[in-house]
Image (cartoon, rainbow, N blue to C red; front, side):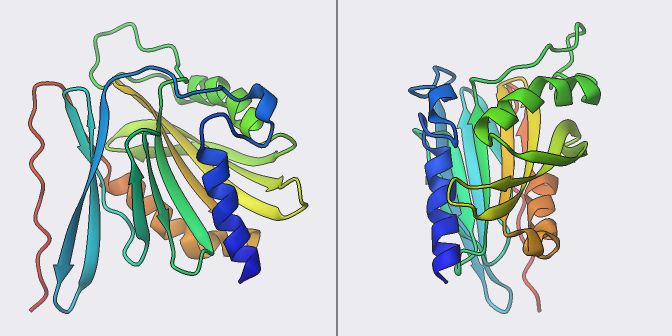
Length: 222
């Protein structure tokens, strides 16, 4: 249990502006960006359980996703993040808006903007390894959120205390900025929480400017 408690503290520490595994390369404060707010809609369905739907407002845009069932959810609008964790601390999933990151966008007026996936990996590999110095990238591939390509990395990383972790990071550029999805687990648990991470990505919905988000209902089980 002490191991998992440390994992929770480490995750939160890495997500605080000005902190990374290599503090000298981290920014000193959150960069300026569009106004950002997070609201969490809680739905408790008899016979089904409790669901959490974080709704993100970025400027005039709205986005939402479904938190994996059984995860507790914490939102921090100032830090532009939603943090999700299983109760025993064995795994955490974090979504962050990263206004400090950018990639070259398509020259065509595509909304949301798209860029070739290899370009995405090239754009995010360096900041990823700055965040986790000494990390060993195991695989690079594409995952998608609301049809948008995301540069995804699996890497092994040892904390300064020598604790080995498996990290999956997916960077998804949108017209309001780059969203970063992070799964942090013990290496032996990556398969167990793979589905929870994919659940966040597959339920992520981006609404272009001028369009009002309509939240779908969750049907109850009879």
